[in-house]
Length: 179
Length: 254
Image 1 (cartoon, rainbow over the protein chains, first blue to last red):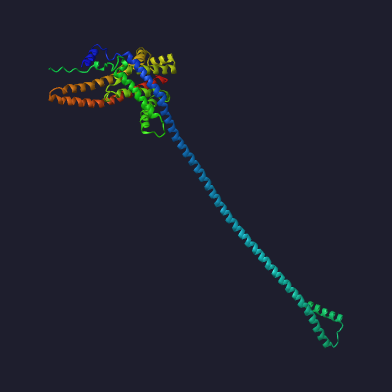
Image 2 (image 1 turned 90 degrees about the vertical axis):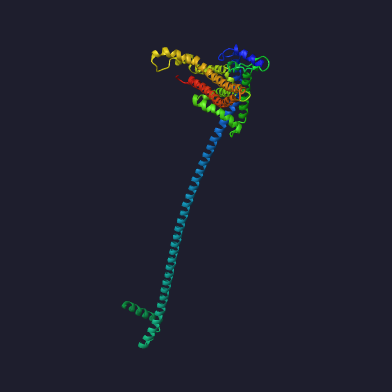
């Protein structure tokens, strides 16, 4: 109680509250300076670092995502190019196969034709040879027959081989001429 | 025994004797002031220590206050050069806010800033900073010329405006800055004391009067919340005005 009275008594003579106490101003300056230095050196750089790190993390993430997307796009483009290449190649192979098939068929056909022509030619030659042979043998036969017939009719023996042959030839050429 | 008459609280209640010893260093406001320095620096140093990309709850709390001052006051008001003033603004805001809030925290219950010496000491720094920034940027002559002779005003008006502007920059700004903070804290504390002491006084009266004592106490509680709003607001206003003064000092034209 006495202390309270003492304070009250002190208050009576105290200066107006708007008159600053110089000691308090100095104390305030010191306290503020200490706080400023502590916050400036210890707290603010750390907060700023957190901000920068966070910005970096977010920006880095975005950049990484962008890079990944770009890579994916490139890969997609590459794959579709490869696919279309493969398609083109397949079409080309099919085309080639078709062409080759056609060529093979054509070749076979030509070969077959040649073969058939060759067979025909051989046959014709054979026939011709046989005909020639038949003609020759016929010629002999006819000659003999005619001579025989003529000798029988003329009664004249045409034994002489040379003469006989000459007569036959003449006869035959007459026959051909008359034909 | 006759009741002594009610003695309303006055400016005398803002005078403290040293808790121990004889030095002013041991008075309540000074101890509170240094306690606030320890409290603020400890909180922000601990909460910013890890500075993780994904903040902990503590870091988030510290960062919220920091970014409120950094972005909400510094960047928005000062603009692109704000970064170098952030520590200053941050110190001002946290220092005033904490000391103001001491006014309603139980057992402390004294807003340090209701002693005008402390707002004055902060204002001295502010005064030095915004004049220094302006003189460094524009040079003393141009600064004074731009200050007193705003462009785009009829010449005769300068007779009136030049001294007014000069006074604004060199006397009114620092005075109002310190007085506003001091006055709000002083008046708020006086008001709380009045209702608390009044309630206490009325409690010793007849039972009918005790009802008014209850009313007085509940008013004191309600006003405490009101005071809390004012305490935060004053810290914000002070910091905002400092940012505005710095922005003005940096601006090319006043």
